[in-house]
Image (cartoon, rainbow, N blue to C red; front, side, top):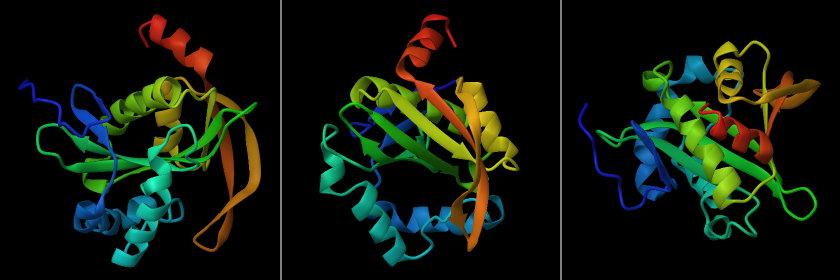
Length: 197
């Protein structure tokens, strides 16, 4: 396997993928990835499909307020493949609350051509290191629709704990959707790292 150098703008680097912040130059590839992923995302994700939608996404998850980890409430990162910089998927920290909570929700989606190849699992491991080391969070919560088996498998493989079921939790594509609630705590993550998970 060819070892590729880490891009200078990478936030974290794994064997096959790296994380970086999304930017205006990603608009065409990002929107194309979302459009190609219609069947994969249908009823599960409301990702931007237009330039205006993508610009709004950037303002919310990659704007100036997202640059300061101590005060950011939303931070988005894209997962890219090391060997060709292809956009693989997205992870979004939202509703980051500091103080006594030190917690965030984590949303994510892959782009269809790259789903099912383990890239998002590798990306999630990098994202968790970002959450617990750089952002110094105590808790990361992921809410997943029960029928989304790939997404449930992703968080279970990473070591998230199933905490419960939330009825009609989020409105997506015009319908209130049930979700399973999973969470990872900083101490869980450290224990898993020590055990070689």
